[in-house]
Amino acid sequence: MTASTQLSCEEFIEVLASAAPAPGGGGASALVGAIGVALGNMVGSLTVGKPKYASVHDDIVMLKARADALQHDLIRLVARDAEVFEPLAAAYGLPKETEAQRAHKAEVMEASLRECVAVPLQIMERCCEAIDLHEAFAAKGTAIALSDVGCGVACCKAALQAASLNVFINTKSMTDSAFAEQTNEQANALLARFVPKADAIFADVAKRFVT
Image 1 (cartoon, helix red, strand yellow):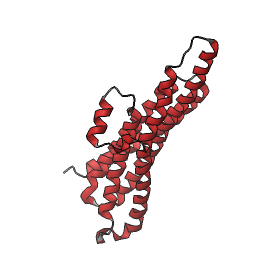
Image 2 (cartoon, rainbow, N blue to C red; image 1 turned 120 degrees about the vertical axis):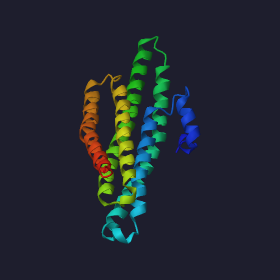
Image 3 (cartoon, rainbow, N blue to C red; image 1 turned 60 degrees about the vertical axis):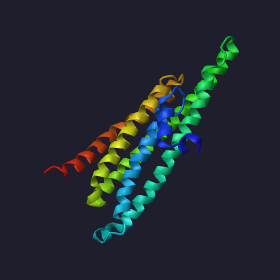
Image 4 (cartoon, rainbow, N blue to C red; image 1 turned 180 degrees about the vertical axis):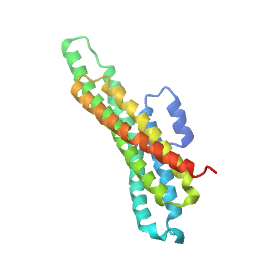
């Protein structure tokens, strides 16, 4: 883990707001996704051991284990997003006076762009898994923390959409148009399936508070 994931909340926000090249949108997306997962996980923590929810105890324990893994992975991706951006930033500064230099720069940039696409795509995938978890927490978790499921799934949806922009901005710069198109299709498929799903979960939670 890099130092960025060990900063206080205030320090992370200050660095994010600065002219520093990282963290950026990808890292912020992963952090928001991790927060969303943690909210669902909290609902699980408040449900485990309650006699009223004894019938779903094993299910909740399993959901929490999956949430723990997702939290850790998304935090790892906060750091990873910063790591992969560094070579891309350096590539923009490579010389391009000669044909050989231009070819080298193009090769380095394409490889760096692939890394910079892979991380936000992974963030998107983890956020989709998290949205599925929230559906289960909404169905089985304690009613006293139901609003936190809604908050959590809203965070995961926002992180999913934000991470997609970090995919698209990098595929736009790629010279391998076939790879870029394939990657865009993957990202768009995740958005098409899981944004409406997150909205439905949020709406289901919200309507339970309407009198």
